[in-house]
Image 1 (cartoon, helix red, strand yellow):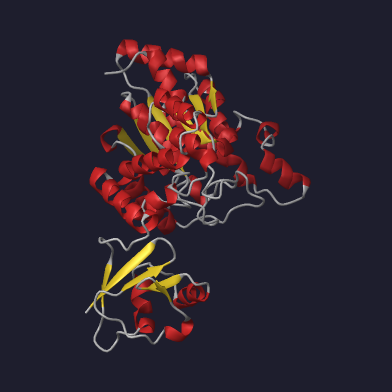
Image 2 (cartoon, one colour):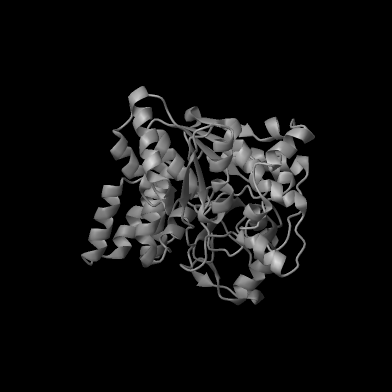
Length: 404
């Protein structure tokens, strides 16, 4: 059953950067409430980057909140547009993806998005379903609905034009095709990050061109990563992945800068706006940010791993990082016969993703980042013979117990 439209609007607005148009949204919510008919929420995903972190999940969490209000989501995998590549923010055109790569990435998305969304209230679609079937005449008719001047309003196109960097004519069609997706899906709402403003807004006039009611555009802010400066990015190493283990996830959330605590509550959790205001009041009242951050870490870990795993991760954190003891529940590696020296187990450490490679392991040792039974080790000790129940610590977050 839906909440009253004004209550729904308060939840939808939480953390949002911009809503175009808020009054139109309220009107849609009022009609939806009156008719008890869910709104259709669209999110387009580019299949070129399938590893989702909390930054990507900001829009997914907002959709989940709207699903909890009774609405339905359509997740659109841009398998057709992925062959062109979204030019947003790019200094040059993207290399087109192969069909095989697009399908593999789309499957990875499928596995990850349902860590956030309600699968029963989500439809997964691919825009090749309609875009690949358009005739050339239909494409020209579609192109006639906008102007070159309108497309050149994009900052990235303007920059590339000024710098005489080539712009492929096919790139002009990307925002137009994304807008046509909204026509085909008859979307009521489309979500995107603030870096997707141009693409998402293209859907409104195109729906109007086809005699439809214009979709609402909701833009979510970009979430800063653990460095507190740059937006969350795997390439920058400041990310929290939705597939990371509960222990790593909780520990990483505890590394979020204090100034971002409220923003993470707004964008990375489903907490009600009233609860977020209480968090701000507690911080303003000089409550220890560390205690509030532990609540944040517990909530985020619960969202992706459940109550039991979240509780275990919290116990692990308190033991390993607050009491500085070796946790009981840690991964174990079975030592192979005649391969029980420290340097012999590096391939097993890499296979278990405790380290990326032998060179990284050596670099960490040289930086005093590896301990055996709570004692720092040096490169000269790589020939150390490991015993049953020895514990290796790599960095601050990774513990491994050996068994014979």
